[in-house]
Image (cartoon, rainbow, N blue to C red; front, top):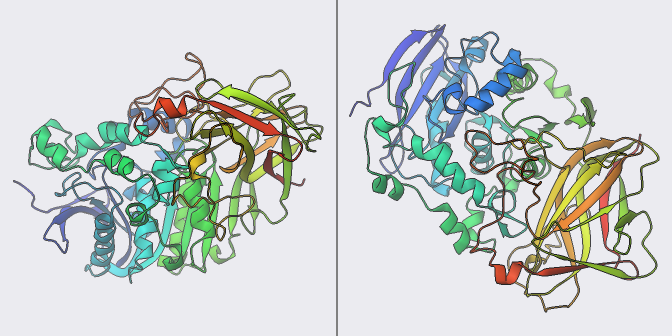
Length: 582
């Protein structure tokens, strides 16, 4: 097998390919290193992940590349784009600024052997060792930053908890953090469809051992997935069964804690970037990742558009560069005066940048909109008389709407739902969807991180997981313990607190705010969606690929049930919205 290191000078960079990085268990990972031609010591931007360090973005993700480069020509400007790679920096735009870019194929992926076990303690230890390895190389000045989208952001929280001595700063761009709450069990409900499809469309053909069946790096001529060709059975044995693991662990136990950050131990300066449209995977971890870490120096940025876009545009890249220049190079560029929070405030037709000093915004007017089951309305006052409304869980549910708004209303922040509910079975899955309708009754939807037509916000809760953690819960952000199963008594009314992930929208005069309650994923009728992406199997109909439809987790005899929602009187169900005064 040819796994020899290659070194070339091309496109004003010194490129070292397949550089070996030995791990403590004798596995040798492989990295590509892009560095300035001029000999010297430079700060490092490092990533570790499964997407193949030699796989060009435009080859593996054709749809995303086409959409991004057509709409944002600044992405391709000033680069040959030969070294563009999914969800990591373009070295041609970083090396000229005096950085070394290190891309590590994670264990079991690309040209690195081993067994894929995503976000596991083993992977986190690997990333720790890669950071410390990079810090002592002859081309390194000992200062290492980690930067990247999604996978390359999610594992940043984990490794920062281990406090690598040479980790100087981190930029987690659209990356979940809590493995249970953000990633695979929203509100206690298994979310596995995305991950099963992700394995098939984004990982398997890049798994180490796919060999000649896979892709060839056009820049080096090397096989992206390594020279070894394994059988399908051998490849399967080298991948951990994520769905099996999640289904075997319904409660938040050590399996999930070992794949989640310890916020109290994260002390490195950090820049956390979220996407308003990332409901189902990416925004929650970035908000928690700003609020909870012990870091004394931390910043939050929130934007819209597709998941992959702003990391590569001049807007996002220049923010990242300023951050890392300040911490890794000591450049006096004013970053220390950068407001802690930078928000792209979402309107129905545009985004408007605004700076804040904290999150949630201190001047927020936490406003209750009470559910009126008799009229299917949302009111500022709770109805005097109690009423109820029932719906089949697997139907389109029930929608409550406000009267037309008499003034422009900004909703920016986390959202919560207090719900009094009874079930016809011993459990109930609550899907809460925040929506906006124009004066003609047409829904205002938005480009999500993946889905082109998403509602304003989403929340989930399995009623048997209703127990709250009193220390971590806030009125605006209920935090569920997920440490015990509390079955329902059929027909008995229970008080539930549903977390709806943070969102932002400025609602014009005359529009209506709406809350839809269902017992399944929100989906638009077939034909109303906008198709799919090449790397996403299921049609995107409002919830993107982040569906909750595993039959083992959601047996129909329990969850194909009837929900009864109560409002008014002493059972005042309400939606708590973060209204920002004009």
